[in-house]
Image (cartoon, rainbow, N blue to C red; front, side):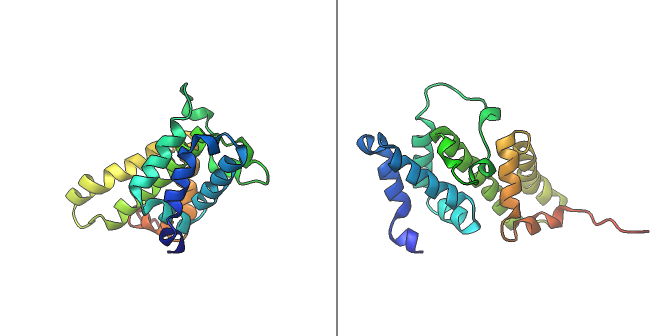
Length: 170
């Protein structure tokens, strides 16, 4: 609440878009460290997802800072930046892609949480596309780590339990 009341995300966006400030490495490293910290917790992800227009603008700013394309396999997952002093290697593009992947996983889990599961039509129309998207994200390293990280936060893994078939001893 305090971050929303103080308009933290809007402040980060202003700092990212100020060319004179972005030339100093300390400003970007502070923003990077804060965003990496927010990506590391459920509350941080919820804060990031609470204001889509601002987050979309932050992500656009981060990923537009690179002129050439970088393959998804070359991007590093969040876990590689959580060790001491390893955040310095996180480029703006990598940070933006981390945000995209983590927030996408959170959105897909939210879709699964609120989707009706009574009939096969409900499963096919709402749940299967979300489950397929989650699976597809695991095919690249950054997506695989994002899915496993977000599922490990709070009770997110329990969202998938209704889709499991119980197996027991016969």
